[in-house]
Length: 266
Image (tube, rainbow, N blue to C red; front, top):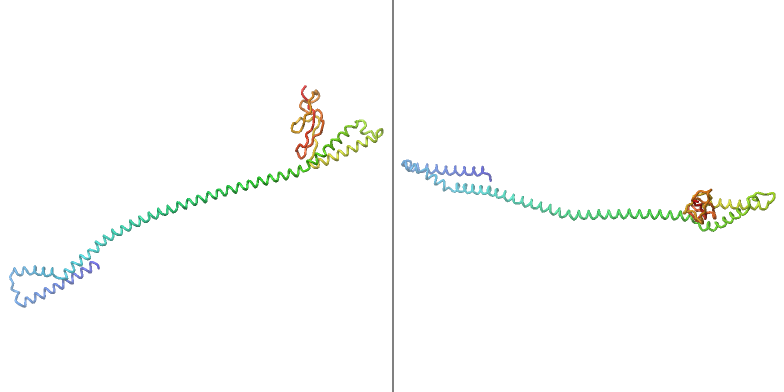
């Protein structure tokens, strides 16, 4: 209840007491009490005040004022009580933040663990792809080499045939190789052996098998096999002076080195 309501009730109680006092005064006047002394007239307000002070309405008003005042103190206490929940809520928020921090740290650890797993899996994947690429390249090279050198053994078996044909051609004297008049048989035989040797050489070249090793070439230990050295003032030192056996290469790989004699410095 507001202070205005209390004031209205107090005013009504005071008016009621005043009306009661006026009634008493009129009753006394009618009874002949109007001729009191100055002292008694002076005491009348005091008696009225004491009667008013003893009035239940005033006592009720004063009690209600005190009662009304108590809610103000209660409101002050309530503000203090409200401050306490605020502090409690602040503490609760701090505790919640701590809980969130404690909850976020395991989540961060889990995220870091998953990121490390992704990194490891990516590294393993890249390594696997690199190994597959290496395996594919090695397999391709092996296939190409197998295709290129599949005829190595067959070619080696024909090298002696080529050597024999070369020896047969060298065995015919130069002045009789084309003498169809005096020695037609020998000339025709030489011509046939020459054609056979040329056809075999073409077949070798078609399959990647080529001859090498000629007089005047620079000696190469990777391709030539030196059987002897001899001085020759007409030739260059370190070059091939004589060829004892022709060398063969299959797809740039030596399958038989040339046997040669090397000229040395005199």
